[in-house]
Image 1 (tube, rainbow, N blue to C red):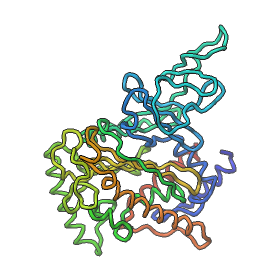
Image 2 (image 1 turned 90 degrees about the horizontal axis):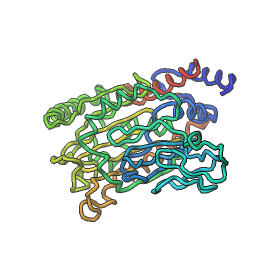
Image 3 (image 1 turned 90 degrees about the vertical axis):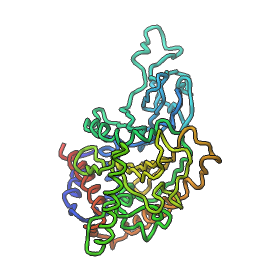
Image 4 (image 1 turned 180 degrees about the vertical axis):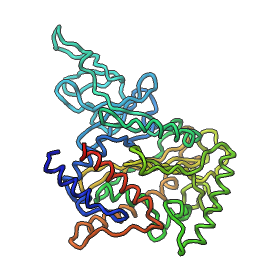
Length: 416
């Protein structure tokens, strides 16, 4: 970015008022969008896929991060590899489809051929002096955390993600996501800035008034609520349920206590296993399991929902019977792709153990409701009447943590 643009961004960051929503430019400006793509999505670990999407050697998915296309492939030895989806000859995109399976990666232009480790195997008509070893695919940092695939486009990836992975592994491992299969995946485009999408996710202040399907099973108190005179009785009862549930789950070897580090590290994250209402089994219309085949070696269907949030672009819910993951990818200053993936045990049989419509009903409805909220907020922010409003100290603590994390990351870059 030019010095002029950096100065403007620094001024915007300096004006940010703690405890208030961001200035309109953060949601509207192409300058800020470019800064977000360069400094947030270009330098941090972002969630892009789940291992069941690339279950077998040669299986691949492509992910578009701004103008950058990434190819994620299962290697012959079972490891996960990630490369820039660009041929080293004249720059053609290698794989145009979102997903598929290959023996080798073959460029459609001149048939340069790479193996699943990115090594160039074949390049015809290049002469005797051509060194194939110097023209392998450009690698991208990639790692799986409990079956969740993260990439980092930076040359030097944030090293604190190693600690995040180590601390999350005991929470995620019992669900054995890598041994699941994808039951459904839905993409929607929300006509709003990606930060509005994330801010909407980071609070449940809006849930009771907007999500009738989700709140059949979900207690809104578990998502950033703090005790207040208005909710004291509800919070006290909820905290009793949490305490009792955590004791039971941890006696079963399931870590459940909250880890709250959304705004205190470069790779911000939060996790907690939360009780579900009614039967307490799953995020479905009757709060019972959507799949009869439980995940991994789990035996008890009433394990609540293990929630895992990462900065800057994901959230996940791990239940006894299925996992639902959300990836947020900016498309423009006012457009965002939200990709939702539902996974069940690999041996679960559709139509016998689970019904896709029942599995996806709650979050398909919730995603559409959230899309409307984000889009209406984008319209309002774009009007001349908008000015940053105060966050609720009782229900929007996690929104403030997202804003703090985001602003701090950009401030670090403008000082560099």
